[in-house]
Length: 213
Image 1 (cartoon, one colour):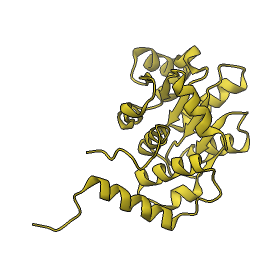
Image 2 (cartoon, rainbow, N blue to C red):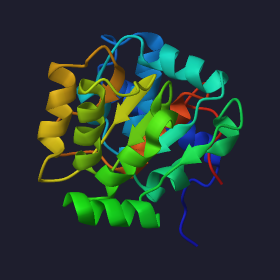
Image 3 (cartoon, one colour):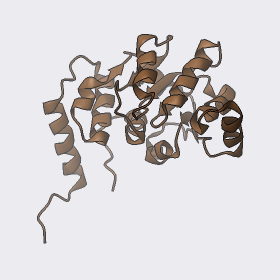
């Protein structure tokens, strides 16, 4: 039998200890550092924590919104599946409309992606919500368009779209002009649903608690 570490709590402890040793987190407030820590853990890359950019109030505003019952609006079902519901403080609704008939129809009519079309379908649910984007740069671009046009404003945006087309630019647009939004993002091509879900999970308290089975 291969000898390997099996204890989930010890695996978590060593993993987070490694990230803390390898990443420089002292520029973040403690709550934002904890979010960066969990995002790095989900990616397997300690430098992700160091590279992340976030507003100082993103964790506080997101937690306040969740405590008040706000939904978590996701651009992909992979984000939804990665969120640990037991960490949500008010049984918060997880919303992803990318696969609905309305999103498919609207995407075809608007000549855009289903992810961007689904953002339009969030409607008034967007007001005061926590947004988690882990797949589509077009979803982040569309969200910024809605805010710029005077539409509903989310409480916090956890923006981790991934890819070679639009990911860099969409996140740069958010960082260069946050529009008064509380946000966390990872500049560049890297991102993904696991990171976005991990950012949401970090809002539930100590990121080093609750190792999955």
